[in-house]
Length: 229
Image (tube, rainbow, N blue to C red):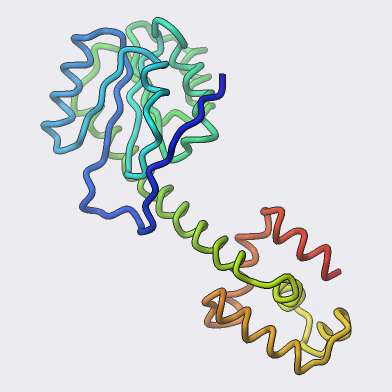
């Protein structure tokens, strides 16, 4: 099953004043209630769920967050839930809790990206410290997501010809060489180059090169490179 989630959209970077959310998925009601009280006392928002499917029905949040996840659940296991959300909730670090930990389970969880693996009963301060670390990691991921989306949007505003000029300019070619490659005049290249710099909000060639480096894994920029070649 691959759940489809609605996304709470925010155009601005995650604010330091936004209350982070800690999600708790555990089938033991006493554990959920005690963790919820502890998390709220620490000044964070807490949402609790008794099973993985209930949690999966919750739309993705665009505020700093983390997931405190029991390994053993009545439907999907915690490890299976981790696999399900690994690609679509990269901003959600996972802290595993379990009543009976073992080395293979711990290794599997940590290799899949968990930030902590705690065995019940655990020290409340240890869990809170893990939560704070996870929240900061989530905040950094969300900030980078917003910045990358802004960069992709600026790149999308370029015309096909401007993308070709950008691809050749950042590869190190001079305006005259770019013109020869594309079959246009050097003056036309300069005009396109000015448009690229303005639309990309690049203050220097070095900054434009860095933007291209960050875009390069994407198929759109790759297509522009192939077209300009």
